[in-house]
Amino acid sequence: MTLLAVGIDVSQHTLDVAFCPAKDRAIVLGSFPNDPTGFEKLNKVLSKTLRRHHAEGIHGVMEPTGGYEQPLALFAYRRGWVISLPNPRRVRDWARGSGIRAKTDRVDACVLARYAAAQKPPPWKPLPEEVAQLEALLERREDLTAMLRQERNRRHALQARDTYQGVVAQSLEDSISRLEQEMAAMDRAIREHLAAHPHLKECAKRLQTVPGIGKRNVLFIMVLLYRWSTLTNNQGNSKGLTAYVGLDPLPYESGRSVRKRRCISRQGNRRMRHKLFMSALGGVRGHNPLRDFYRRLVGRGKAKKLALVAAARKILVWAWAVFRDGTTFDPQRAMPR
Image (tube, rainbow, N blue to C red):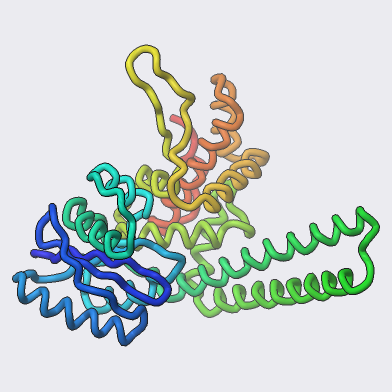
């Protein structure tokens, strides 16, 4: 099927749109409001452009911009467009490699259109509604946790300087109390959401059989696995998943003399990598296959931090197998041959 490559530069209020009839040039369509009225107007303009260029569908590419792209992405997905949300850094590196240095909204739209035509990035699909709602609840709870930690640190600093008194002290106490109440309400909302969707609760229960996964991190890992499953139609493998999270090894070698210490790619969600690393840190302290795996690596001379990163990757691989197969973790299958 012939798809028309369309680049959309998204901002809070506007959409700058261009299309690419050939790989080496792009044509600006114009600017549209970033609201439902603008979406309908853009859809009409692109329908005419499709007929003019004898294309059968639209491949729209836009960069993630803090959530401003989500309404248009959902609108386009429901109308049968192929939508891609590539990493902005990858697009920018490709633009520099193509000799494009300028950066304006219209130039960015043309770059995205040319990128769509040349690279054909993989399609994006929205999460199931109940998983998207759970993700929003978890993100809000993380924000509240960070704000509460900041306020408690401020209180501790003022108490250490013996200046915790008066209006400032009352303001901090009120803020901390309010944040604690909001966190309790968010925890209650998460429990109610899981109770209303038993399949999510059962999935979380199965994932907790994996060493290193407990109540504090299971929901975040479950949302990650749902996202990977959605992106790959449940056909993705564990190697692709570790690369998606950024836990894949990144060797740096050239000739005989250029050698750098091996590290991971650090692509994807940094917060998720941190959670997996902390999961490994806790998991290797128990009596389980993860601890045996970690001790084997250390016994072969691997640095402890490197072994913990490998353990985090192992947790992710095991979690994906449990999620994909809908079964519980089998310690016997995790033992070395």
